[in-house]
Length: 475
Image (cartoon, rainbow, N blue to C red):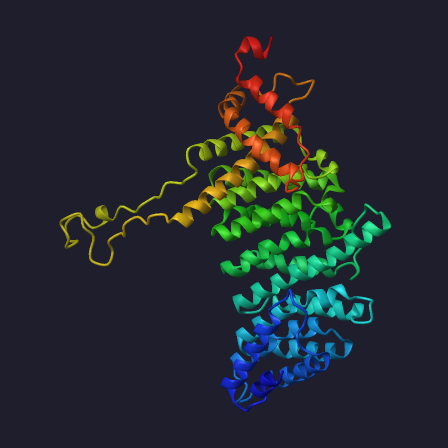
């Protein structure tokens, strides 16, 4: 404590910076209790408040480093007395001319979500203060700096996760299955969702990726009555995610796939079957396309898991019709064949030698000019190979689970001849692979890492009938 105070109270920018960074390292050990006394933390918060003033001794780096210590100080020794100073610091840092300071302020707000949204009504945080914090974070979403926008939507995700956990706890205690109990009142999370959807169209990949992830965190915090209108937020989310699923880079795609799965499995959405089916109709094609053809394995895995979310609850049965299964299974079969062939997308190399041939180029041979020659193909390291194989194993499991769900939905007592024609041939072709992978998939479900209740014996029996000679299959 004395060392940190000695550094941060010196009228020297370099020493202050080192002092705040040293403090941040101590406070960064989140698994350990706060190593400082409550009185000392309260004093430090006041010092941070002074350090946020843009003076000669308080450079932008010092201001950002000072603000980054707030979550550890407040969560380590929470008190209503400290709260006012923290709020004043966040507001000052949020109005700072330097983008890195504003970014740190938004990040600190996200790290403090547990305080602002988990302590409502317990003499630490008043409801109006939580509402004010949410509106303040939403204001950052339109900041001119991409890093600030990214930090803001990430803070919204953290806040939504904390508030949703409280709502689910209330539901569990009251034995209510309705959900939708919003402590902040109607409209607040809707505004947050509106702001997040705007960032989903961002030209910068970083905030767009963060926004795609945040959409999924906001799904269950929307009011039920919003679902009755044709222009609902859920429908707009579906359209935005359908675009995000297909638009590189890969990080944006897999975040969009993940949020699409949360949307498809949302109990709030499934409470209105017509709206739920409309969302599925928007998302099913882009998810199937990425499952069967994405160049990134993580995108394929997330797309497969997203489609699986539709089977996650008893209410989700209203979504799945025979037509939907017939649309998904061909993509599953194609993805299985991709994995069977090694799970690698061939690199497309530009034809540089053609580009520099011909008269007037100055190069009569096939070699391109110096500096434009294509480097030799990069050899995969052992670590990359292990990661690739791990992703392939996970994709095999997810494909087996989705194939099982689709197959068991397609086969019914009234439809013993399903699947028809080409789909039957495609499924028969990959049936041996799916039967082999089902062992690992079944083990994952039994270990508690998979929530799906799948009749694996029935599934493998159906696959066996597909590969049997016709006289045995229909005898």
